[in-house]
Image (cartoon, rainbow, N blue to C red; front, side, top):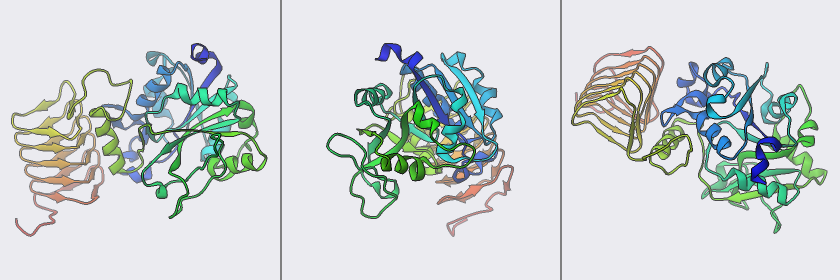
Length: 361
């Protein structure tokens, strides 16, 4: 079936979220446009869709909608035909899918949650959908601790039997991975013009009317990029080759340094660190799982671990940032210590030694 996917399958990506858990980074850019392994996060997903032979992609946007079209345009540079639909008020996952219906052409529609970094074989998901003649197919991924997620049990034929909210004692390790295949007529049935949740409304209603909902279960790479911790780990996994992405050609390793960045001798870059364009890293700095957005500066002897440093931000000499998020244009003074989820808002200036966790000076 793969030879004919471009004409028979549309892709829809829902990118309307506010990205509140990643603030302050998402004050200036929507989460799918934040750089992950040196590219806008969304570009990794678009490259996977193109690699699967699908060419027509509709983005369902709301928050900072214009940024997507400004960057990706008509999609031709990625070998895609991109279209954009903007929600005037948030409609939820189901409402967002229903809202793009006027742009859909194909009878098979592959829907993605734009927050997920995944490595599933999209062709295999589509094959499951067609081979089982399903009405809707869900990509389900097995996780070691399913308690934080909605669980989706399946029967011996792989048909979905229930949708369970987060529970302390899940009956299965299969979770909803945020990738769905719909027969077009089932998108047409979603109520229009109001917020609708696929997980809480659409899917349970389909089960109640005995529609065929199939599960495609695998152990592929999967991470929801909603929190700073997951964002850092997902980016590092891409850099190190643990997470797949057709958008990243060539060598994988402990760091990804963009041409035009300056890294002084004696700086240590490990743990899947990303150094953006125009970044300056001083002598003896230690970057472990750090993401430095374009134009950031990390001065001599500073340490940045598992943290995101925004556009044009500065980390002063011998400062320590661990598990933090530093907003665009902020300045962290010399010898400051920012730990355990600290967030510095854009443009804030912390003086030398201004914030410490330890008692020595």
